[in-house]
Length: 130
Image 1 (cartoon, one colour):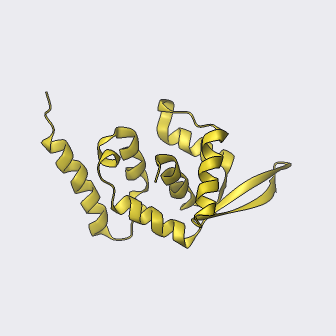
Image 2: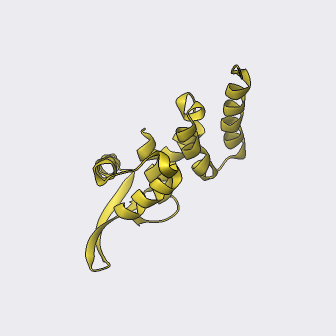
C-alpha cells in the first residue's frame, strides 16, 4: 500500500471527506515537505474504491458537486493490518513514520501498537549515530 493510500484510509477513519479535504489534510500532515495534486489523490481513491476499501458518492457542497469518500469495514481492516505490520521504510523513513504514527491509534490492540513502536525503537538503537 502506498503512503498516499494509507493517509486516505487514515483520514477517512476519522470521518467522510471529499477529495479537496483529503488533499488539505495530507498536506498538513506532510508540512512543507510535500504538496499533493488532484492527479495524486483521485487515482489513489479510484484504486481504493475498486478494491472495495472505500465508497464514493457525489454530493453538492458549496454550490458544487463533490466526490465524498467513506471508509468501509474492509478499508478499516486493511488500514489496521498495514499499521500493525509496519516495518522497513515505514518505520525508518521520517515521512512514512509520521503517517504510521499519526494513525497508529486506529489499531485496537495495545500490544500490536506497542510492537510497532518497539520495531521503530530497535531500528533507531541499532543505527550508528555518527
